[in-house]
Image (cartoon, rainbow, N blue to C red; front, side, top):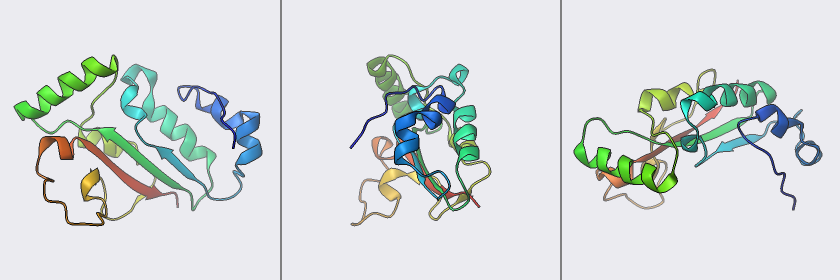
Length: 145
């Protein structure tokens, strides 16, 4: 196993890192997993540009698994959860469902689409999927055509 130390805010450096190139054959489909990372990036750090760069670097048939903390309308519980979360993280960006959908531009979104994580193909029935906490982390999987 290897770990390539790099900064996702500079995706070309990640993609061109010798250890990454040694381990991953970018001439074959891969899965880009951006789980629990994009919500740590502010808009001025260009998370959309990062995803765009990664999407352009992989071949058709590659998958993207993307998650982000998601703002749930004007619910006071959502605003409080967002406030607490961001105070604990120090920096970050909770995004709307529409902002999260932008990360999937140019990709074929797979069923069930962009949904709260407990609803993404659960092994057992989800009984608390209506709670704010259960819906706060949202994500989806998509394929590059």
